[in-house]
Image (cartoon, rainbow, N blue to C red):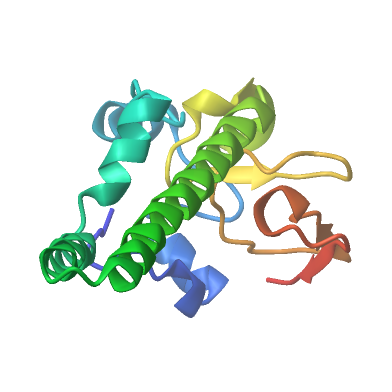
Length: 182
């Protein structure tokens, strides 16, 4: 399997994608190749690392070069007895940290929601046979068969579709399903 192409699969046709992933649209991967790719890539799961607590996440908002410059400016203006300027600069730093903390918390909640929404099983074509497998066993090059109401179990390249619409509201906030084509 060629991996020198990078992560720009959306720039390649569906047929070329199949060639780059050493698979076919009719048979998919054989058992040996699936085992080899599972050993190489590991399971198709979002890794969960233990995150920092809320206090540490808030304090890390101050660990940025621009914040250091603003804090230095606030200290200098304090020594120059420019109380209003120093107060405004300190206020900007605190508000910036609070907004950054809120945005990071929202992003962490979105990631957790995506992890919960991952499907547990999906249909694939392997060795010419359609079968149900746990989504965690998907590998690059698997041919996934989606039907109405299915959740997309991984990042994918659509090779064939008919009136395909995807509800991306969990990712983008769009309320209307987005039409996709091969």
